[in-house]
Amino acid sequence: MAGDAVVTVRLVRSFQHRNFKPVVFHQVDLDQTVEDVEMFTPGKTHVHHLTPVFSDTMKIIHQAHGAKTNELVMSLDDDEKLILQNGQTLRAAGVTNETEVAFFKKEDYGLYKANPKSAW
Image 1 (cartoon, rainbow, N blue to C red):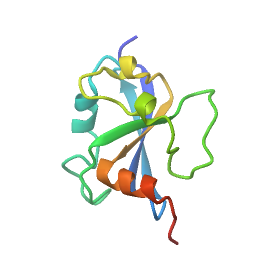
Image 2 (image 1 turned 120 degrees about the vertical axis):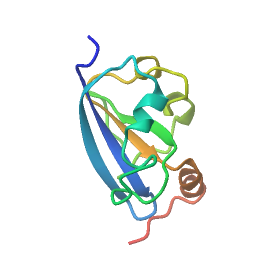
Image 3 (image 1 turned 135 degrees about the horizontal axis):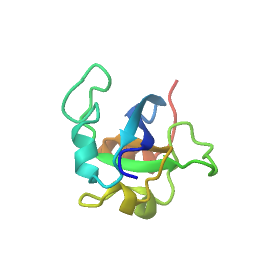
């Protein structure tokens, strides 16, 4: 049913410092596109106090009743399968009720993935 999903978006400020803020969205319509969700998610173009970077990429990091990664921010694996593509609906991208996705800057993710070291 449209509009009855709960989706948690993890706003990633820094992979290296493991800094993120989870935001829970209720009554999410899974038939809306990835771009529609990005436009109204903090971190895209407004609410800069939550995340100072302009996020541009979303990736599924956990689904209800599934295994979680040992990585504190998100898994670095399966990008081809888990990164949400523009033009897709959330449902087509594999988002279901109680899915958790990360919203981050792709350039920062690429740098961290090339050298996945944490700084404290």
